[in-house]
Amino acid sequence: MTARAADRARYDRATAHLDAPVAIVDLDAFDANADDLVRRAGGKPVRVASKSVRCRALLERVLARDGFAGVMSFTLAESLWLARSGFDDVLLAYPSADRAAYAELTADPKLAAAVTVMIDDPAQLRLIDAARDGGREVVRVCLELDTSLRLLGGRVRIGARRSPLHSPAEVAELARAVARRPGFEVVGLMAYEGHVAGVGDAVAGRPLRSRAVRLMQAAARRELAERRAAVVRAVRAVAPGLEFVNGGGTGSVQYTAAEDAVTEVAAGSGLYVPRLFDHYTSFTGRPAALFAQPVVRRPGVGVVTVLGGGYPASGAAGQDRLPVPYLPEGLRYDPQEGAGEVQTPLLGAAADDLLIGDKVWFRHAKAGELCERFDTLHLVRGDRVAQSVPTYRGEGRTYL
Image (cartoon, rainbow, N blue to C red; front, side):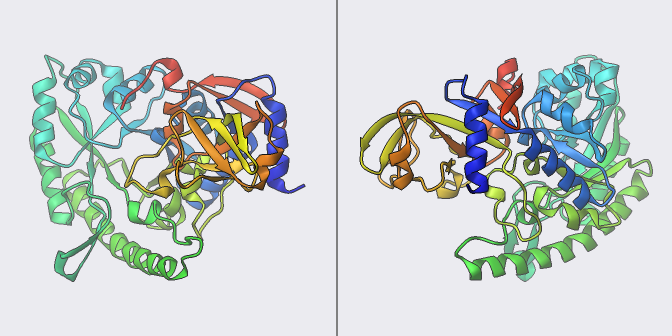
């Protein structure tokens, strides 16, 4: 029996009392992945990205481990909810235009002390002030640096379109704008190198592309390390009380943590290890989050149909954004139908061994987005469900 076949047998036994669709997290794999992130961080704290987890119980579980400290959230409303739930160090990773949430933040000393908001434009400061509605609490601010690699005099750009702040001078000028404005304090700097952390460099069957990605990423890491250090020096000259410099992501933890200027790294997807994180030379994780769909039809030899399963991930549309049939091994989509909203035909010899009601296990393309489809995660230890916990959706929290 292969390791994957053994996993399938365990998951089927653990969930025999549960009807599919069902979602699980393998706790042994989750904990092993957490340990690997800490090892790669080399002694610097790992801030867990809630976007990639979306389950309060699992956020609490990972933050109870040595090596993890703080949450990186994705909306301001989520940040306030987490802070009210006892999370005392929440960094909002994206600028917000949620005026009602800003009014709450600036009126509550506990929330203002626990939550740090992200900005990259003076207009965001004006929006916050206009939303205060009498709230006088000092807002903790983090400045975001654009990490993109610019070549040929800026005519070629590699990296996500996030912050407009690219140079040390631009970031320092925004820090000065914050310092001049009462009610705000610069406490952090963030730089997410998505073109390194979120792009696999070992794409199966594409050796030339993989080599090109590795060359690009090596150049990007060198350029960013030098520029990030200069930005930190420039910002500290304006805001000597800077508390943290955050960088990285699951795919770049060890590289980012090696920079002297960085005080902490961020990661989240590396806990679940969805399919998009299978193609890295720098680390190998264990798939921890899976979902199962039931076999409901057997249309013919070598084909079964499962209920639903068409859960595409965000990003540029493509085959790599679809869940992948994982267990039993050897199943694939029908190219004429793909992953369907209410039914999904699956082809392959393994289909002939499946019966009506059997489970087919899938891996989502990305991490936390799976939790937008399920209200419960069943936490599997060995061949039993150790605990069933609500996702954000299961707690009535749908933020995007």
